[in-house]
Image (spheres, rainbow, N blue to C red):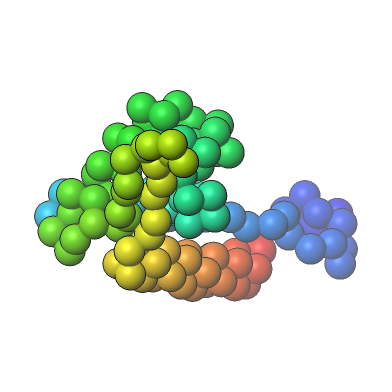
Length: 120
């Protein structure tokens, strides 16, 4: 055993990171909002996205309202229900937000893993 509680040659435990980005405008984006946008993109529906994520419709609506109220424009567009039901779709800004967040998240995870590996 090493002084770190591992056997010689054993890899350190996997490293994860929780990323939330706060802007001075009061806007924040984290894993919940990004997952919601990704599910809206996949399902075309806020209510279906909420079901997939195991969150209440009210919570999903609140997160989406915060995203759509940002000063850069809405992340989604919605259509009111009817015989075929309503729907939701990502805007170009919504897609850009997902890409930006996932890119930063990937960089943070990579840096975290390399720093932890070097330290342990």
